[in-house]
Image 1: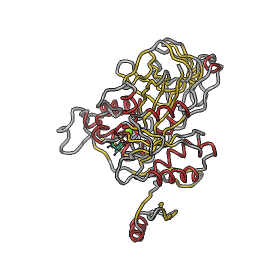
Image 2: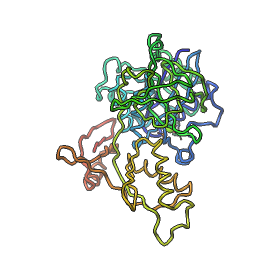
Image 3: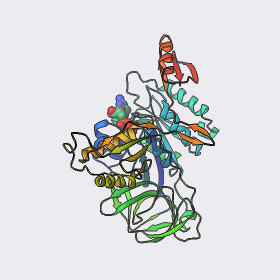
Image 4: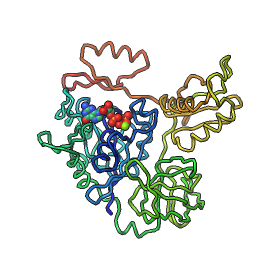
Length: 434
Ligand SMILES: Nc1nc2c(ncn2[C@@H]2O[C@H](COP(=O)(O)OP(=O)(O)OP(=O)(O)O)[C@@H](O)[C@H]2O)c(=O)[nH]1
Ligand SMILES: [Mg+2]
């Protein structure tokens, strides 16, 4: 069966998950009310925290979809995914227009040579302005140095909430068929006969954990075939090799995973049996095969210390309060939380390094709910030294505002070490970049 691999990317809240859910429903892979956002914290906060895979079938073709998080703290997760797919649906809110994270994920996609399909979503909103937003998206492509081929992108207009898609604003539509047809037309076929006949090369871009199976690797089969009991060679980023044996193999189907005996080049699968597998390594059949290009993982930007609770209220809240219990839990987290680093070397605390406040807050909140009790220090920005220069992570802020407010905003941000880098007049609004 032919396979297409896509990721859905966008700024936070522009409708990626709603669109993925609707695609699953309309292809019979999910029931009404079922969602890709299934984690408790995801449901409560209404945001996606972990990128997730699903597969749908349309006209005899399998479409593997990765739904990604839009929050900037999880941006590195998106980057890893982009390496392993062939095209993206760039979802843009037809009222808000492109936002900072739209720019970030689009830049990454263009740099990788992907040709995006632009999805202008929420055209039902009363203040939606799809024509203007379409132009803004085009300008953004230009600003980011898109090639002529990338600039020739297709635009689809959607109301993800109602499961509607159109190729033009005037078109009448009942469902997402126009989007599905566009995916089949625009996204390159994932593999060819030549790649299928080679020896296996598989590269994970995500990790998962199962209490029975242990660590699971989710990735793309670039060449050859995987069998559920195959003996394999794993090549790490440093070029070292080790051997392993696959014990189980899964493909995705809607919200569930399906055990299969084998899978072929082009597909995105999950494998069990390799307990020390890591993102970006290459799983191959023979030692002499070349490793695939590594996948970079972004460096942490903030850190905080985690202590055993020694306050007068110690032990009132949690079930798990000892050093050893905290350590075990943190070690378990490292199995799947790729952007996270933890330094266990200090005697009285563990130092946690994360991609942002939200990234660490999610971990702490999960631990608290599981019954862990701990004390934490204030987060510190990580300052890195390179060639004698101090490097500090920074954030980019974009403020859309009426002209007369500009002075006040500039003053407030300058007070917080904000540097204005650009000011643009756009559709009657002033756009300031810091
Ligand atoms: N009016 C309108 N609202 C929509 C539409 N699509 C999605 N929404 C709403 O937009 C909000 C965010 O949708 P999500 O699908 O969770 O957005 P997301 O892009 O997955 O967000 P993150 O994963 O957190 O980045 C929800 O409240 C949706 O109901 C649409 O077509 N029209
Ligand atoms: Mg989402």
